[in-house]
Each structure stands twice: as structure tokens, then as C-alpha cells.
Image 1 (spheres, one colour):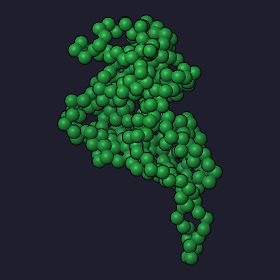
Image 2: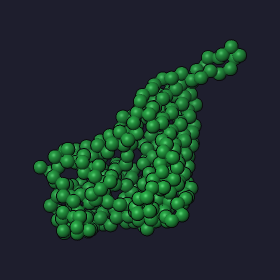
Image 3: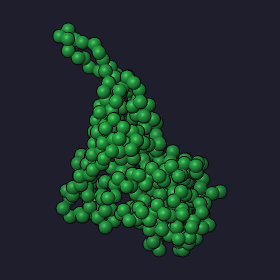
Image 4: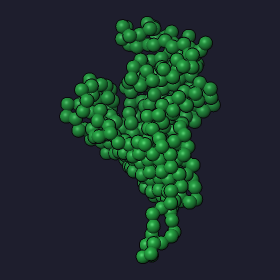
Length: 308
């Protein structure tokens, strides 16, 4: 039976642990808190087949540095972001272990992504002109937010930008390639917190100079919505449906344009899409090490766009 040295134990980490358990991987939890750890000495890591870094954002680079120090020879699964600063990014790119690191980005390894990718390349959809994505929920107003590491700029420097936006930046990078430019607007709405709870990212793609706007928030009502306007089509996504339209060249009796034609429609569940992508990422991690170098290079590209 394969074994995993897992750093982290609750919330998102628990979801990953539950997936690993179903794969019959022997799991041992490491935590800095002696009351919560199952392993007292971090350097026992060398006895395990895999490392999973599922701890809060600000600890990821620290643990990667420890693994670099001992030149850990096996595979490392790490939640994004890998780093917290440009300096850390530069150092990470020099690590001997870098091509053994697999970054866990959400949504991309899913049927949902495949559908968007497929139709984005169809001639009857045309060229992407502009995309608007909004992903929001009201975590910032909960009693737990101020107790959580996400509300503190010391443990979550870029706030919602590095916990949520980063997934969608990666999503559009994998869809449309490299960016010509990227900029971020960051706001702090919750007065008692110190981290960013509202962010907007504005991207211009290298290919076709398409415009992509990404808005993420911890301080507004629950919503997930994407509108992608192409020269000959429209893709819309919400919490329940994805719909894809193509242009109609017909005219009404007044010689005016008519509504576009529905090409594809499917009911979706966003939570299920996230869960599917995590399961698929773990499968890729466990079975296909040949993807690690590409994954790391893509991850470095995205981190460079986030951490200035």
C-alpha cells in the first residue's frame, strides 16, 4: 500500500484526505500543533511515497523549502499558491525538487472545462471578444471569518485574489493562452480584517487581444456567473446551467436581428465541478509524473502574474 505524508487536516484538506482514503492510500497527518499531529518529526517524510501540502497559504513555501533542503525524491502535491512573494518565486524556480511539484488548481481538469474549450474553438462561435466572470459568497460576514487565516494579510497576503481568483486566472490561461497584460484591483471591505476580501482582475490575451474580467468576493451574495461574448456566439454559465449560442443571420419582419440559436445546454452543479477537478488532479498526480514539468511551468507563469 502506498503512503502519504499529509500536511493539513481540516476544511479543504479534509476533502483531499477523503479522496485519498477512497484510493486506499495510507495517510499520516503532520501538523505543527503537537496535539493534532500523528507524526512528531517532519523529517520522517522521507519514508513516505507522496507529500500533500494542504495547509494554509502562507506555509506552502516553508514546507517546500524543507523538502528542498533534504532533496525529497518523490512526488509533491501542493495547493496553490506555492509562494507568497516574488522573491520566494525566484527561489522556488531554482529548487532541485521543482519538477516533482504538482500544483492543485481547480475546475480545469473537469468535463465543464472540456465543454468550454470545445465550443470556444468552433468556427460558428467565432473569436472571443470579452468575458465577465463573477464568483462571490458572503464568507466575510460570517462569525468565523475574523478567526480564519484568510482574513489576515500576514497569512493571506493577497486575500481572495490568491484563494479564489488564482483558479480562474489559470482557467482562462489554459483556455486562451498567455496574457498580453494583467492588472488587479484589490479592496478590503470588512474593517476588522486586514486582508483583501474583494478583487477584480483585468486581462488582455495575447491571442486576439480578448478582454477577460474576473471578480471575486467574500463580501457579497452567493453568485457564480460567466458571460463570454464571441464574434458569432455567446457562452453563459450560472450555478445551474451552461448554455451555448451561435449567431442567427435571420431577420424579423422589421428586418432586425433575431435572438441567437441555442447550440448546447447542460445542467451543472458548481460544487460538483470543483470536486470532480480535485479528484481528476489527484489521479493525474498519482499516475502521470510526465505532466509535472508542464504543470510547474504553468504554475510559475500564473504566480508571476499574481505576485508583483
